[in-house]
Image (cartoon, rainbow, N blue to C red):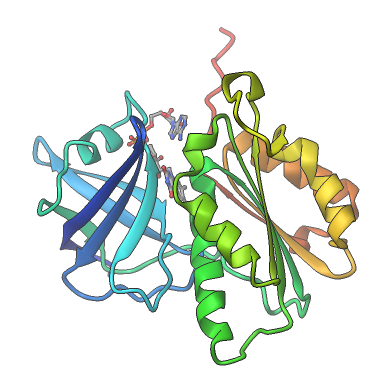
Length: 253
Ligand SMILES: Cc1cc2nc3c(=O)[nH]c(=O)nc-3n(C[C@H](O)[C@H](O)[C@H](O)COP(=O)(O)OP(=O)(O)OC[C@H]3O[C@@H](n4cnc5c(N)ncnc54)[C@H](O)[C@@H]3O)c2cc1C
């Protein structure tokens, strides 16, 4: 039975007022596959408030890293925002989820689609891949990552990290902002993931004969991209999705 253990918040990097990177040291090392999530928890009024968070770090890294958005009226994130380095939180002693690199398909191309913090599992997969490449494992794999945000500062330092990995030739990293009028200095791509998938998939040779698609983050983007990839003849088994939350539709009565 999974249980919770204490962990220490070692480092917290605030990228914006409502986006932060948390690096934590659990009491016992957490085993996980890149792409899986950990469950973080804090106690409030004698109750444990727990939520899943994709792990950003790769298994070879010493600390567990998370990229988290503050949901102002949420139950857990406002409590996380009160934490400072040295404070204690809890982490479930087992990682979970099946959103990992699909190597069983035998397909060599992996197309990753993310909104803001939805990049987390992909960073883990790509850091792990870069680490493996030092021993030549997986040298035939290719990755395309489309990362969307409203504003350029929401990419944080992941933008530079991923662009640097892109220099190695096995990753095409495209970051795009959906509100160009708020980003006057932005010279990169403009639009949502949905607007750009076909341009980059077709342009870089990612199709249903050679690729797996993954989509993570905002539920609307996940559903839209699932439909777009379906129309591009990707089968259900070639599309992997992770929705971070659901949008509640108000009851009409
Ligand atoms: C597998 C998985 C992995 C996840 N990984 C991450 C991650 O890496 N980083 C991360 O920031 N979140 C991630 N989430 C979302 C996270 O688990 C929480 O739902 C989120 O942090 C809000 O928690 P809360 O308790 O503060 O708000 P809640 O009390 O759970 O939510 C309050 C309301 O806000 C809505 N809501 C929740 N999240 C958002 C959001 N981002 N934007 C708008 N509305 C929202 C909920 O639907 C709910 O109606 C993940 C979710 C899943 C299922």
